[in-house]
Image (cartoon, rainbow, N blue to C red; front, top):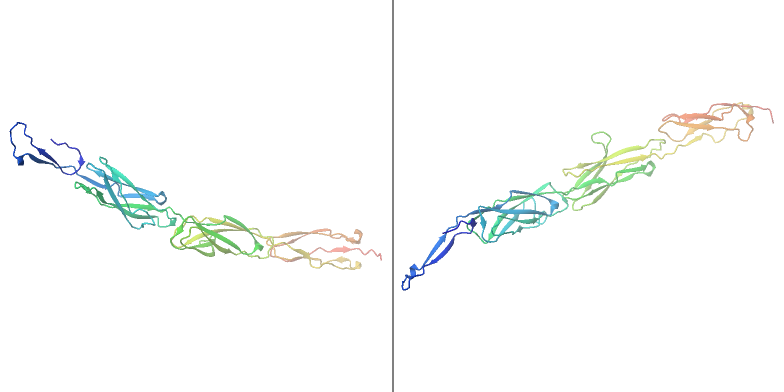
Length: 351
């Protein structure tokens, strides 16, 4: 009598011994023993549980599982799983050449973990390597080992980001040219990357301020570019606003570079003066004329100037119809000289 146990254990033998039960009976020695072979008809297949394993780089490990179908094993069995490099390389992308989980007797599944390295390097989005079952111990002739390879696909999560050091800045026109700093951080680059800094003026290309290049093997890098500030000596200009952007030059996609708002404030003072510091007229001249006011620098918008006058060290009766208050207007881009209205002098005949 034999039992169906569903255990993959290989053929087994039983030694049967004939023992006389009647005193005096003799059984020939050759007929005393017999061997019974129990042929194990339980077979199984050992294979990797999945054809593809996906893992994100910063997860650190990936679990690889082995399953047995058709039955279970009678003894604990060590299963060696080996890794082979693909686009992902040992010691740079993964850190384990192999694992050897134990499949416990009577169980049908076991797992182990491979180390995944987080390298902080901006790489292609997916890299892969393969794993397969290389051997088992102890060997079981009734167990078929499926050595089909499974792919381990590593998703790179290192995002190199390039950004302006400041989101906005205000510069004075008279402060001269300014330095704009751009920062790359988040991950190393596998190859140098050039960025263009430009002013977004609504056109497709904008106004380029120049290019900056970030190198490899350094996570955080700073680069600077010159922002030209022109002091044109024109007063009354409104603030100038510029929107700075970054553009990739090359085929490496970097994180959202963001923008920078730059404001340039006019610091040119308005200067107005009389053309002459003093005017001399004889009392009998009768009329004061040709007193001119000069605008000493260009203006970006019209300027109204109030001129106030008084009798000086003479009593007010000295003048008749004198201009005590007058408003004159300088226009942007217009004449820089304006004449005051004439006024009369009284000839009082006093010596």
